[in-house]
Amino acid sequence: MNHEYLLSKIHCPSSLKRDLKQWLKAGVLDNGVFDDTETGTPQGGVISPILANIALLGMVRFIETMYPKKRNVVQATTIRYADDFVVISPSLEIIEQCKTAISKWLKPVGLEIKPEKTRICHTLKRIEYDGKTEEPGFDFLGFNIRQYPVGKYKSGKHGGRRK
Image: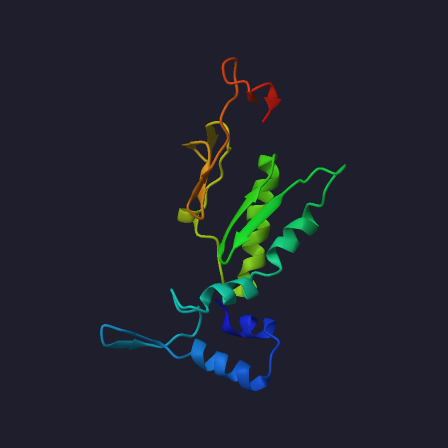
């Protein structure tokens, strides 16, 4: 994470900002070996999630602006928790455009989308994407998010009431 970008987003007294900058640049001591830190935030640090929230604050609004509701229907929804996020859309084309747009948006922040942590999938059925078969659903914040088919014997009704 780009420290200068992050500090530019924090509006506080200059003495507090100076302390925060020193904390970000303090370095890391690992097995007796000291490493400087020019970018990023301490992994597992108590303040790291709030710093991620500050750095990524405009990303959700950016996607909402790119894809506003059409005829009162949401085109794309971004759900974010600290530095983890998912983009949900009924359109594969919009998902691909969001991935590209978010990658560009993250550059000045000093972040990037990690291909090994990124998946494009459907929540109901298997899909072929990028030469691979993607299983339905995804894991997010310890939950598996997916839909299940409703058929002849699983009508979605419960005691005459609709679920």
